[in-house]
Image 1 (cartoon, rainbow, N blue to C red):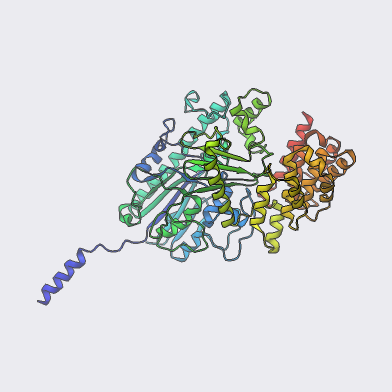
Image 2: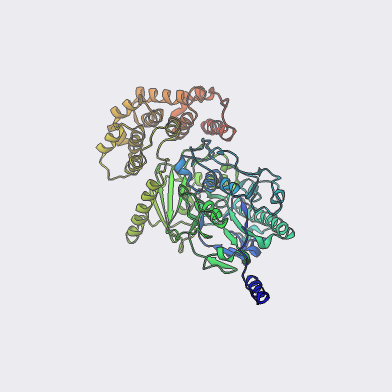
Length: 606
């Protein structure tokens, strides 16, 4: 009888599946590419490795990076929260980590995972302690301890913007077969850049294939969950840096082996297309969930896989702050079909002169054709002052060229998305509604930043129906950020409003905030009489000296001087004599003042 019972017990144990071990997690990311891949229906692409991966897993139809440029997007990825919450949304910021913040791989390491990164970091926030077991171009899962689960990241740069324009290059893809977006002029340089981009996607795909083969060779494919994704849209202009779908939509493929099928969503099917909306802000929480960890409450992302998966998002959000040397402020939202974009500095074009972007031949010839009057209205819009609100139907208009914001039948959709965006900006504590120099000063001093009041001021400043006296009241407000928006609002209204408020603008020249002074001086140079104009120009030139003033004040002064054009001519020699480089700056943005200075002075020589 005892033998029989023991035998039955053994049989019972044998029929029970042992609990699965913790999965390895492999991230394969590529730079500057949207879903221009065969598995996403692009017949021009040659991407067999990624296509094969997609056949084994699921593709996400609408996955968004939160920012259309790498450093801001990666800051969101590594923290699991929106970079705007930390004020780390400006491209290549260098901020201290807020107290208590951890990057999500630190939670994995604490749980026993080996975490490696090969090799790009490029975060806008300083690392809060040791994040990786190794982060270098030699980092690999193969360096972990025996049987230790791993989280490994490999970043492939072959498709980066810089590789599109590298010459000489013998094209593999026929440029005459490339699809030219309607906003790009059909010129030889444009066709060459698009074909070269697709060539580089193939190079990238080959590298992805090598890594997948290594995983197979190590016998780890059935123990590893694989993510493949791009870091934002294509490196072509009006993709990278564009806060719409072509700049934010990325390919995302996830393969979850049968061993971990309990971590799959109910919609999982090999080769399937997943309609759930996902964002970079969700990736950190999702990795923790797959590893059996509960994401911290402070993490803003929502896990979309694993045991801690949450309800799907109804909206995705994007942001754009300073792009290299150029000031900017755009926020966007999509419900999966419609995209709403809000520009808080609508006097600027989407296509500001960012020096690095102009190294791409397409950018240069596109702008030259615009200057020569050779473009149609669709191709010209990128270079013109933009609308404060834009709305696009992504199903009917995937290139985002038919703006529906003023369409009466779409006002309900526009207003619904605008309200959802407003709520999101407050709920996430978006710090982008302060000038960068003021924001940094308040963060360093620990001063409270009144997000809701600043957002309201930003929205009102560009509202043409707002009575002018309310703008004047904003200029007299106790908070410098609100005062800055009041000055901006006068500028949006042009010469007549500014000339009616010269007394207020003159008073603002002595404001406690240097950012307010810069904004007021810009308008006085444009619209005041000669004596006051000269004083305002003198102030801008003094503040442009980066060796004597806060760096981001000087950068903003140079931005304003550049946009003032020929009005700066009396001070050209003085500006040319200012130091071209500032000692002690972080390398990441040391080139910004020299680029602005070179561009402005070169334009005056034309």
